[in-house]
Length: 298
Image (cartoon, rainbow, N blue to C red; front, side, top):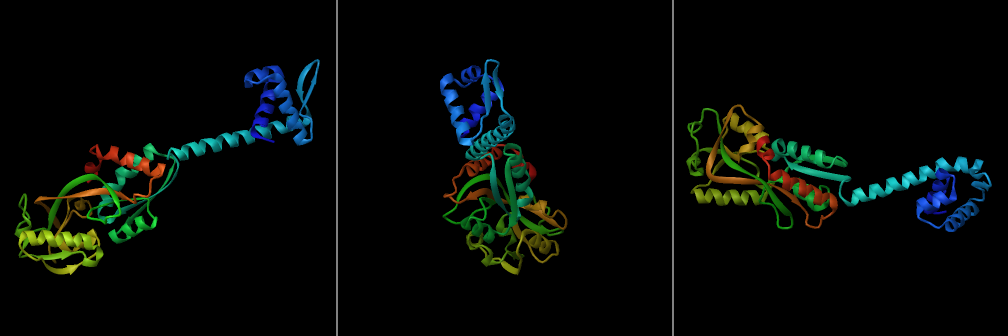
């Protein structure tokens, strides 16, 4: 028994006429009769009675009809699911957000994905940079929203660019300035993340501080933007963060842009991940990057 046999049977049952069903199916009537006969032999029952009064379903045919319709409906549904999966409209998407970007990047990204691809099962994770990179490499995350520098084996696209700021305690001598140079903070105590948290970032920090003519006096280290901001608010020292970090804490600290200093937020993924869901994600983020949505949330 094949699906086509069920379709032929349902067509004859709907029309109660072999000739009309054959015309509907674009088959020769003789061929349709042969196919129905083959189905009846496979089942071992007669499905139709045919006489001078026309074509009628037998009792077996009457009971078989809703079952045949259900099988065909499931087959059609399966085909639709396969086609939607091939277009990347359904499936699973695990996204990682760097802790310092989640506050302003997660809302517009998730909103856009739910609007454009409502059939996706979406899971989000708020993680530190080392876990984010390991998760991409290990296949735990399909894509991540983070900041460079990263590592060479990850592909990235830039989504937003924003100022980098000196973050000062409220009441700091330079808090009222409209802009600062990194060198203006050479005499201050600093709070930074641990060097081991992500060496590529700290290599860049070292180059920036060297270019500014000093080595920062780091009095305390902390993991995570919220902890760094808390230490600044407590007057322990100053730090340096992207402007969007002001959405994490707005009291006890002042953000002052550093002249000529900017940072990017990127979507990152493994180049080997090239399925239809991945391509749809990149299409959505490309469209999002062309709007003001990302900066509006920052």
